[in-house]
Amino acid sequence: MAYTNIVRIGYARVSGRSQDHQLQLDTLAGADCREVVVETASTRGDRPQLRKTLATLKPGDTLVIYKPDRVARSMKELLVLLEDELHAREIDLHILTGICAGVHKPNGQTMAEKMLFMVAAMAAELERELIRERTLDGLAAAAAQGRKGGRPAAVDADTLAVPIDRRKRGESVTAIAKHLQIGRSTLYRALEPHLADAPTT
Image (cartoon, rainbow, N blue to C red):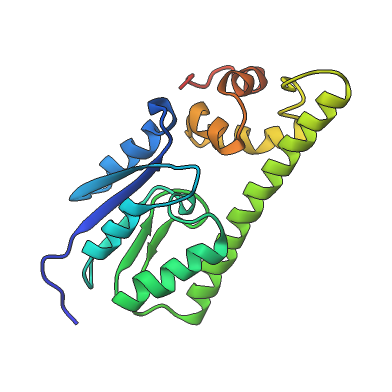
């Protein structure tokens, strides 16, 4: 089926602090979107702007996002969105970064492609959980030794491997710190010996 007037709509979910989402907005700005809808994250997890955005999309259009966690809190939620909201209405999903990056189309997908997407989504969710667990373990260890905040322990050797790799790929320290749920200055200090020549953004 040929579609006319196909559009690409970007969707960004951000915190209330501008420094935390500039990379996301810059990436979407360069993704050939007709417009970028920005939603401020709420503690309740509501996404009214996402619902409105989905309602405006038509068959053949594309929803463009920075990473899967901008539209879903878990793999299950992501797959429900993909199948029920997008594929059912013949809408493409373009993920710009991360392990699930690429254009996911409702038509022409083989079972192998769908399985690869599910494995990628599962891996991304597992990575987030492992990082969170390691961070919490580090904070707990710091508290047990009488330290508050856990500056050095919040980013131990195991946890540090992931931000080092992401920093080498060009991701900002601000974005990585938010993903790890630790302080930006804490991550700067931990990364400094390993990435002395990297730009400090």
